[in-house]
Length: 260
Image (tube, rainbow, N blue to C red; front, side):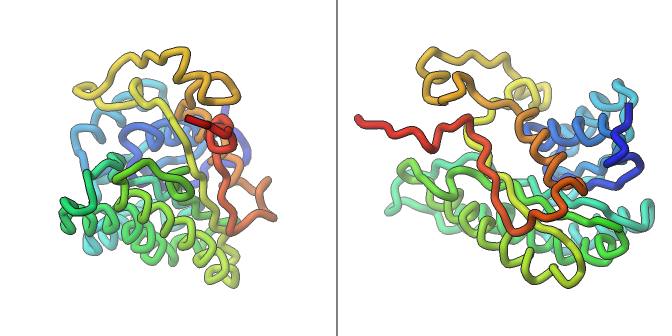
């Protein structure tokens, strides 16, 4: 049954064909939204569309590489032509593999590409979505960051830098777009298991050890649904007094002291 908070609302989710993005796409569509998902991977996009349409959900797919300005401009043109307005932009697209090897071996082209997708992409999407967001009654932007913005494993320079930048971009956009009545927030997921939310050639049945689960005070690894529930709240009118904030969703993993 449609949730009145999102009934007929237009929600755009970048990187929405797999993983957390697909989980959010399903949740918003189930809540009554008309969802547009974008992804660079057309195969994943087609499979996501098929998966959601089998549930009789209203979803559209548009291919887009968010690191390319011309792609983002065309994406927003198509969304505008079809829907006129945009109620929520969720910047989820990202290069998710954080490990790049030792600093002395770092390929700067890899660094540049990660920042182009993970940080420049959200800025481009916000820029070109702005005219559509301004037409909405209660517009919102949600950036999907990472707990790696605040803590690191060795040799994760591009990913950590991009997500740290996205956290800063979130509060910068929140202040800059306040006059337009556009709220901007972020979610920083921790370990979210996406095995069953990947395209067919990459999907797998997740198996987690006792140690994996016990790293989290809640006793389990996260699921895309955990992020989706928070996204529904932050993009809704119920969160109307929240902007410029980042919500960590990690089962408590980042608050747990570990001595080795």
